[in-house]
Every structure is written in C-alpha cells, then in structure tokens.
Length: 328
Ligand code: UDP
Image (cartoon, rainbow, N blue to C red; front, top):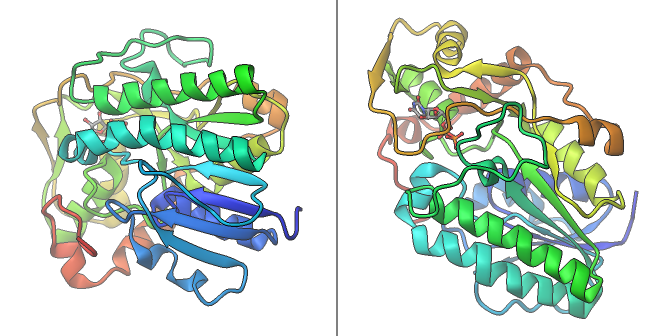
C-alpha cells in the first residue's frame, strides 16, 4: 500500500511486534525493528534478517532513541504485557510506558512521523460496565500489582494526546484486548499458553478463582488488520480492537481440554489480586470508522495456535518455570 515508506516498530521481537513486522514487510515497507529482548525473542523475526528492507536494533527505548534517515511511521509496541512479566519487571514496565513513549513522541516530532501506540483494555481496569466502550474511563487500582502496567499505559495515552493537541503530531491509539496466536510465549503466564502448556505436559489446567471471570480472545491476524487500518485512518482518539466473543475462563478451559484431548482436569487456584471479572470490547467504533471486525473464530484460531505450540522443541515445552526461556 505504501511501498518504500519507512516504519519503526518497537517491541519488534515480541508476539504482536513480530506479526506487525511481517505485515508491513509484506506491504512493501522498509521496516526498522527495535527491541531490548527482555520479553521478546529473536526467533520470532529471524526469518526477516536476510531481507533488504529490514533492519534490527537491540535497544531499550526507555533510553534516548536515534534512528538515521527519514521515518514515515512509528508503531510503539515495546512493553512487557502479561501479568507475570510485569510482576517480575515492574520498574521496566513503568519506564517503557513513560520514558519510552516520551522518547518516541520526540522522535516522531523530529522526523514528522505518524505514531501509533499500543494501549490496552487494562486502561479499563476491573470494569464496571460490560462491554467496554472507548468512552468508559475505567476502574483502575494504581497501587495494585497490575497498576504498573495499567497506569503506564494510561500515562502513555495522556502523553500521546498531549503531543497531538499541543504539537499537532499525527497520533493513533489502539486499545488491544486479549489476543492470541503463534509466537506467544509458552511460559508468559497468560491463560492460553498456560492451559495449552499444561495439556502438553500432561498436567491439570490451573483455573484461577472459580473460573467465572470472562475474557474475549482475538486471533492475532484480526488484530493486525485492525491496527493496519487504524494507522491509515484519520482518527486520533483511542479505538478498541478485539473480538467481542466473550467466554468464561472455565468454559475456555473446557475448550482447551477438547482441543488437546488431554485426560487431565481443571483444578482451582486462588484468584490473583485485581483480576478483572469481565472483559469484552465494544467494537462499534472500529466497525464504523475502519469497517473492521474479527473474522477468525476461536475454534479455527485455537487450532492454529495449538499446532504452533506443539511444534516447539520438547525441552521448551517442559520448561514450565515462568522465566524467559531463550535469551536471558
Ligand atoms: N488464568 C487462569 N489460569 C492461568 C492463568 C490465567 O485461570 O493459569 C486466568 C486469569 O486469572 C484471568 C484470565 O485467566 O482471569 C486471563 O488471564 P491472562 O493472564 O491471560 O490475561 P489478563 O486478561 O488477566 O491480562
């Protein structure tokens, strides 16, 4: 669509960042990937290294960011993004959402780039309205375990809007709901890799609380399509991108048991502090502004994702400790 245009993607070696790199490469962009590899994994983008229109910098965007040459677009996707990650590295999570976004907005301003930032349904906290429209302000505990992520992302949105209104910068904000697909980290603690990993190891599936809490899972290709459309729209306020097909965690566990054919059962563990009770995106805005809606149903998406996890090396599947497996 924009051949020859140059785009910087932060968090390029992560789950979403790597899929975005693939998409923009496919569309003919020159892609500059950046990642400090704390939670990212170079295996997600190693197939791109031989391409002429891809380069990669191992850099922490919380420190001053320099990119030589012109830059048309920036996608800011660098951040730890699972509860386990931000419990383990809370300060880095806060820094990438605050110092990091400041650096990237400054870069966007100096290069006259359009910047899209990855925000999250976590800005709604433990929501008291369901589904969540963009106008809902949220119910967030700033000092709970999720506060470091939620407040960093809320600050990031505020900072981005300030650059938009004060400096006239072209900005876009996507609020991403639970997303899944190949290249998720098997040991990132999220429910989907947790359940599939447990099934593959022949362990019981650990449901937190009574499993009545809900989530709505979006397949990664649908999410990438929504982000692509948002970048090229002219809308600067936040837009929810996610799949509104809501399910309880208990029902989700049953689906994983069926999918994997495991003989294990679900066991119940303590519900983590501030775990949202319900989450479902209101996607009216995306439907109307971007003519976007998800296309991949859970049955299809889960099958592809299961095949991916099954194809991982045996020792990685067995490595169930929640540390970073590959490069740490
Ligand atoms: N969860 C669970 N078992 C696990 C991991 C997570 O029951 O092994 C629950 C978790 O408490 C939450 C939901 O699954 O209610 C989704 O958790 P996840 O960490 O994937 O993402 P969140 O949407 O909470 O950020």
